[in-house]
Length: 135
Length: 394
Image 1 (cartoon, rainbow over the protein chains, first blue to last red):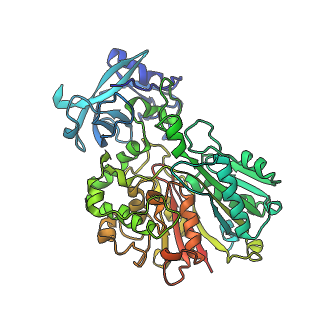
Image 2: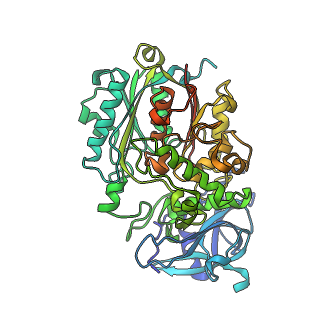
Image 3: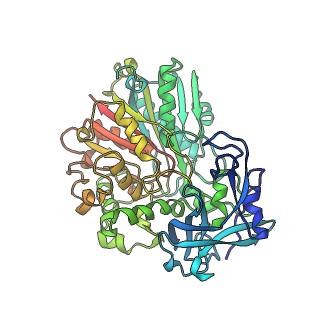
């Protein structure tokens, strides 16, 4: 598979892309009202608290939607592969773009229960998701 | 509703460059062609153009997505304007029009030259093939959340929304295919369309899967070309040679999360509240609409807009387009009458505005909708972007 294009790291997104080193999925959360704030920003849009910081979540979620990509957009890419949006178990409006791994593309389905796995890339750890049953 | 600014603005002229799968002119030269045609069509001169607007503004990144900006065109035509703008953070491609409405209302200008230039056909031959990712560079900004996941194209990203729509609505491929097949039938009657050879439903169903549920024929066609329109203050418009195509109402809101991952409703995308805003600014109803030019970056966008504009109920588009009769040139609601971006070429919503005026001015030739259409609904964009306009020729 071709190299992944990596994100530019800043103060807000660093935990998300690096806590995978310890196997942890980091999502910002408000300490006051417990709302998860994603994409991460140190402000809670629900209670207006600035006490918002990355917190480890379960790493489990469900496939909200997905697409099986068939077109080889670049040389050496191995199609088909699955792009998906996964909602974390803790809060349905936190959706993560991701690839579904650990199963055949045709086996991915709506509402499939998935869990995070991490892939190392340079100095980052990229969250991917696999079916819970494949653990 | 007489106090609404868009009701004091009309489209007074349109222009289109040669549109092709590989131009023999530069992007700026194509833009000049479209601009001069639009100015002349309005019965104006260069000296009377006192505003310029485009979307999303110049992006000198080699992608061909927007190679020409307001400043480049201003200098090429040596225009002297009271106001200009070009920027991507707006209600989709129509942001340039909405900005112009505001500028006219503010007294900054009277005749605004609005344009959109694409050079994607040449870009794909000469630079890099994929517009969303660049190899070896880290990605900043909102798209960084997609970047690591091989999201090379808008087709794959937006397939996420369309696949959920299929799941929820139960629409079948043979129903979706009516958009591509029908628009190709319209394009066959449009001498300026890129693809004019009719296709059948079987052709559609046999076209390669790009990213489920998108097939090749669901995707618009990258081209080199430019469209220009002139929008004028109403008193000026009434003195010009074309009957004003009034901007009866606009939808420009952002009352939802503007994010490609977090937007509130993935399957309807941002469109419902934008369409609702448009209808709130007019006494006209969906039943009053004669023709529709609905965004078709992908055929599913058109299907989404049919529902979100209220031409059919939620998840009712599958029945509305079944068999293709209702949306044909002689149907109840002719849709994308020139072939749209799928067959006439990806002029990115401004081809739709050009076609709307073509029809409202009775210039459609072999594809002219009968009965002198007066009211055209237009819409643009998908995902978290959306804009809508209702155009009326009195």
